[in-house]
Image (cartoon, rainbow, N blue to C red; front, side, top):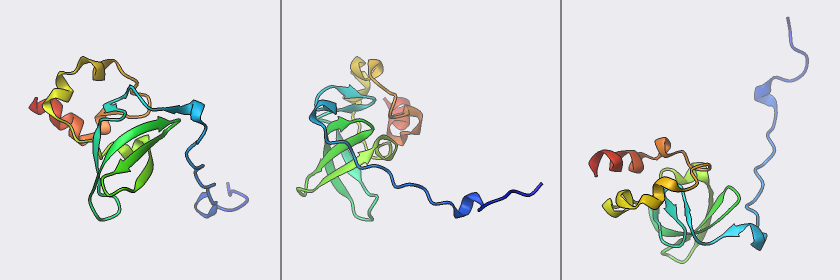
Length: 119
C-alpha cells in the first residue's frame, strides 16, 4: 500500500522550547542524578573548544551551567551526560544513590560507569 502525503523525512520538527524561566520551577540546591547543584563541575567540549563550568541550577529538563570564562549555558539532561567530572568522593557519597535519576540515565554517563569500575 502506498502512503499519501509527504514522507517523514520531509516533515519539519518544531524547535525545542527554550528553558523555562519561572523562578518557582528553578531548583538551585540538591542532587539530580550524579549532579550536585551549585557544586558539580563539568567539561563542555561540544563546540570544539573545552570549557570548564559548574552546574548551578535545574529548571524542568534544563540545567544551567556557569562556565569559568564567565559565559552561561543551558543544556538538557541528555546533553549533560558526557560532561560531569567525578572524583572518588562522589562514589562514596550515598546521597547520589538516592537521588532523582529521571532526567539523566547513569548508564549513558561514561564517567560514571568508568568511576564505578575504578573506585
